[in-house]
Amino acid sequence: MKIIGSKILDKKENVVDILGLAVNRITMEELLQTTQECIESREQLLLGVVNVAKVVNARKNSLLRESLERADIIVADGQPLIWLSRLLGSPLPERIPGIDVMYGLLREANDKHYGIYFLGARREVLQGVIEIVRRDYPGIRVAGYRDGYFDKDEEERVAEDVRDSQADIIFVAISPPKKEIFLNKWQELMAVPVCHGVGGSFDVLAGITKRAPVWMQNSGLEWLYRLSQEPRRMWKRYLITNTIFLKLCFGAVLRARWGKLFHKSVNLADADTD
Image (cartoon, rainbow, N blue to C red; front, side):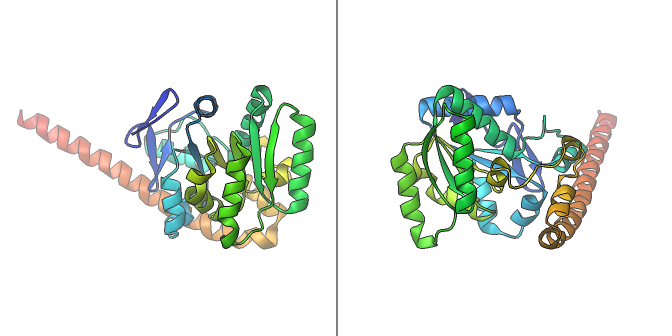
């Protein structure tokens, strides 16, 4: 059990087992309130965000899985995960996209004058992000920034730079599983209250790529929109991961339904013997 702000996060309670990963039952409002409490108290909070691809990849990538399991809060970014939780009989309250968490933290930081360190993406993308943040969120203290192209032997130096910046929040825009592994490895040294891996969100913030329309997000078709933007790079990834995910879902739902039926049968048998 870990106490974070005014909330107690018990991994045996307030979580839903999504194909082996403990995803928190939490709303966006509750999450942002928790991040604010952590910043004010200087407690460390590591956020984990999972989608279909990450749930599938975590089953075969032990480093990714271990890094996710060490997150203090894991949220579901992907409508299919919400649907699966309902089919399993343990519904998650809402979908919480990682990029929406980023925008929520930007607004919070702007209002509270928090410092943010921006780590990741290409140099030109990062520069665009910094320009937009300084223009649209003037209340934010840009604690520091660095592109995501550095070697393993430079990681400690990067983490020390983040620590020395005294940032309240760090956004890590590096592709999975590298960002999860980096945050898990260097969170303690960086000593930043809120650590959030944002993946490709800097590209959206900088205006280089666009998000799927809301109706596609809510229909679980955001992957199709991304596929239309980068068909050569994404088709194989989505074909394989989506197929594996559907198979895993079928097995998980079948086991859950069978388990409930068996439990009900046992209870009826016990009642007959009374």
